[in-house]
Length: 165
Image (cartoon, rainbow, N blue to C red; front, top):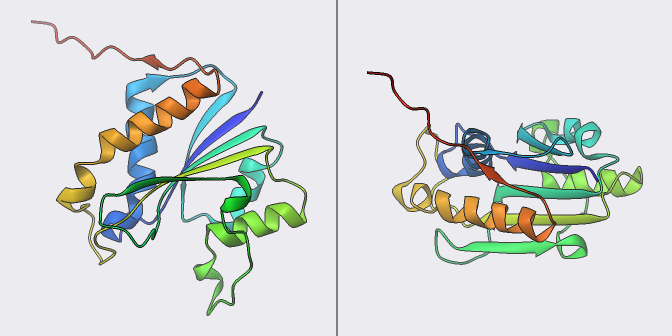
């Protein structure tokens, strides 16, 4: 079994970078068996195709407009995740839907795809996430770990380094 856990988003646009922040936090807190790869997908767009192709399962973490209150965490799976090609102003506007559409065309879509999304509060330019979204990071991490455990993946919590006196 091969599983990719991919955090998406632009860390220069406040809450838009939540997926990247989550996967980086997971890398620092947990270890997994070799069949699980934790990936900072950032704004790779179509460059993600070679990272997700051939996987059995794909877990995505991203800021998602659910039309709910900021901080709302939702899960969307498989065919419920939009995968349509939208008109773009430039190649820099390629999003998750476009990547999933291309993956379908190339027959690279994993058998199971789950998106864990959080409703952002601000997409303005800035490096720091809003307090609302920053306060929900642990809940998103718990949702990711819960999914991996549901998929029978052992998630080993790393022990904090002990300082020597």
